Amino acid sequence: MTDATVPTPATGSAVPQPPSKSPMSWALDLVVWGGIAAVLIYSIDAVDLGNLSQLVTNSDQIQNFGRELLRPDFSDWRLFVAKMWETIQIALWGTFLAVFLGVPLGLAAARNIAPIWVVTPVRWVMNLLRSVPDLVMGLLFVVAVGLGPLAGVLAIMLNTAGVLAKLFSEAVESIDKGPVEGVRATGASPLHEIVWGVIPQVAPLWTSFALYRFESNSRSATVLGLIGAGGIGQVLFERMNSFDFNGVSAVVIIVIVAVTLIDMLSQAMRKRLL
Image (cartoon, rainbow, N blue to C red; front, side, top):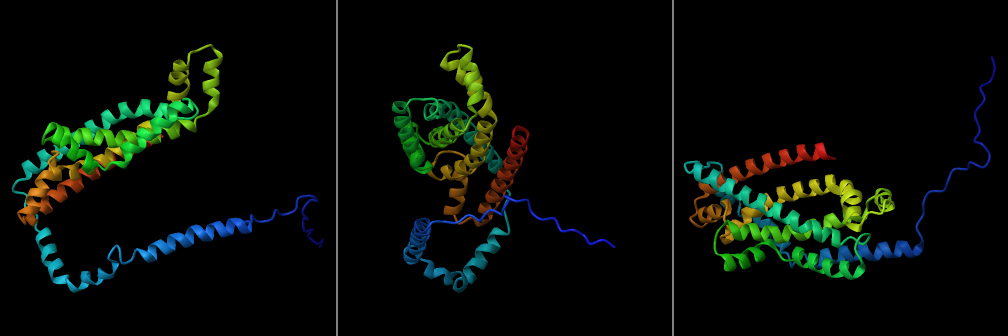
């Protein structure tokens, strides 16, 4: 019987060393994560984590509240469904208008397309739109146009435009330069380069971003109703003020069902695109 030969590694193919960090890199990680841990520890009192025990000590009140929520009152279900449909329309129109505002902002904020003197102010505008909460914008538009769904549409439009413009610009900055250079080689104008070299590459991703924001805006529109910007949030606020927790439970169930259906539809559409 012959002895089996054990293959030996070829000369010059030594096993590479595992990646290692320099002492400076380790020190930087220690500072960053240590700072985060210090902030978390310092903010324990600020966020009132010491009162977590009230979840147990006030268990009777929680049980009474839970019993009311477990008995939803759907006697006004037609009103609830109509207001939920209004909420979806607010989110749909807000997202639709935000896309039209976010596309030019996203292109103007992309460093590989626009000059720096255009990119910088556009990014400032995008930061402003993203930093102002929906509720603040909603209050401003309630004062401007009055109570109703229009205030919600405008608030969602501006806030979502800032978010989408940021996502759109990042998608443009990560495109393959080959198609753009190919279009440029034909003597096309910069506008044609964008239309034929950039948009076809980012359109599926842009659509996915817009669908995701529509899901999020369906929930945001519910909250905007609390300040009179239309939708089912206004009905929810009225039921809460009147301590009609059975009605609150019915409204919450309808919101959950509607948002879940929107999420399922959006996921199915994104799978076909990406």
